[in-house]
Length: 331
Ligand code: NDP
Ligand code: MG
Image 1 (spheres, rainbow, N blue to C red):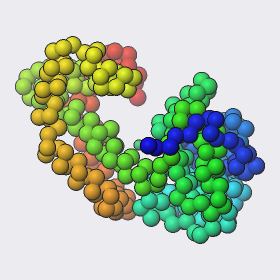
Image 2 (cartoon, rainbow, N blue to C red; image 1 turned 180 degrees about the vertical axis):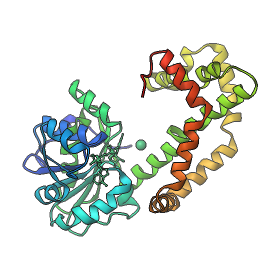
Image 3 (tube, protein in one colour; image 1 turned 120 degrees about the vertical axis):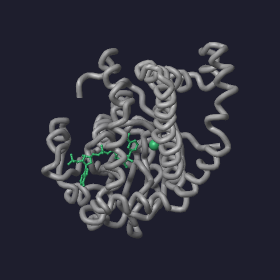
Image 4 (tube, helix red, strand yellow; image 1 turned 45 degrees about the horizontal axis):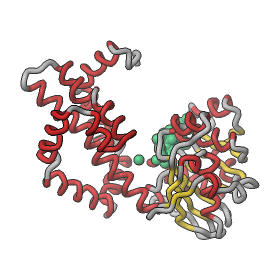
């Protein structure tokens, strides 16, 4: 069984006298720093001086300084900039200030697990990760609750690295909902697998393939959009709230019978075999290497794929329909 920590299992003792530098003020940086600050912890924010988030963080009332200054001043350095820029920023602006006994912290295990960031001896390496986008992290905290999260300890130099992680998790509000103890490896590999196979990759391809099938057969693209994309949210909401059983109970018997008898023709043994291959590519570091090279080359493949995705008919139809339903304002 996994170990889950709640509010009563965590204290601020290991963090209350420390300075926590949040590096980055985007989705997670803003939410986590505001929550920790409101929980009474000592937060400073490290940013690049001419960047867009500098003034935002100041306007939110934070003590803002350069990344180097924050790294030097802090006992805990919590890196919340995009994963692909972390190695460079770490090497140039953080590493020189990582004195013995400090704690290096992340919300995703990617760079540590794949060895793209190699901390020196004598520091703690931990993860404190909300299982939710930043906006939700902040909103639920303000409502008096929190989102669930993860904590991990990769290196425990001071002997209280887990207490530090739990203190931060409590400050962010994560222990109110529950925090699972995991490892950098498990978090990184399951996270990549989930986003590639289901959440981002699998779902979008399923939607597009079903949409194209209906449109090819002569059905109105608007009808195809409603059936294969729009309604997905209603089903996912049911599963989110009540599990698979709850969803099956709420749809018609016809939908239940059709779904149960047809689904394994869509996700079949070939799809499962491909899932195993994708997992292997993650486990062996093959995906990480591909993504690193892609970034070094200036992301040509990502840019091309972004363009193709943007030009797809479903995007045009969807945009008009979402506007019509009042779901999306003009971008
Ligand atoms: P964002 O993309 O929102 O981070 C933006 C911030 O990073 C801005 O403050 C930006 O500063 C700064 N930044 C970007 N590039 C650089 C650079 N080259 N040098 C210095 N600062 C830079 O990141 P997220 O919040 O999405 O992700 C942060 C971490 O949290 C990642 O490890 C991610 O995996 C993890 N995570 C994210 C989740 C999410 O839902 N987004 C969920 C769980 C974990 P400026 O304004 O100057 O450009
Ligand atoms: Mg994820």
